[in-house]
Image (cartoon, rainbow, N blue to C red; front, side, top):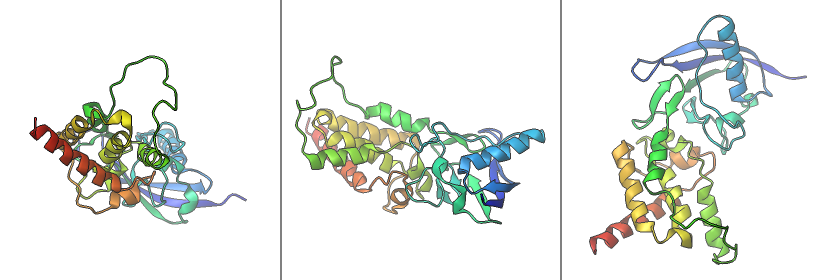
Length: 254
């Protein structure tokens, strides 16, 4: 028999970026523990709609733990209490009957609240546009063995490339820093031969764009690593710092 639980939700409601937000209390009754967290919000929204109230606005897309758009802060934890789990993959069996759950949006100067739990995370896209890419000639796909890469380096690059850009690192950091995100994006390219020609300019441009957008700096609190659904290591921040300092030295000699 499917188990059901009754919950009290305290959800951040905000009409728009220029409005003052507040926590609103809702009941979520007879929630199946087989449901995902987003399915639970869907049920609450169905009831709100039937009552003629405005449903809770929240972001989502794939609901497969791949895109990270679903991120909110649940009881003070980005994506909720489970490690290596995006919010859409968090199931209600991890909560108990009678629990009170507080649901809030990502908090950062660079992430403007659009409505309720929906935030504008385009600042991360601007950081990528500043240098998170390589410039190559288009054409047919090159042979996979044309550039030989040691297995340990390839695995480090793939670990960094696992970052889905959800912004949990920013939301969990007391300084609202984006350095784990940037560190991962810089690392995945700096480790590979294809990324080395533009490595210096990339590091300088991405870090400067991060500062311009109002993200904070890293003070090694490690909340970002703890809350990252893909377990991106803070060693990538150390690699980013090395790339940044090398780039500063490189351009100072020109």
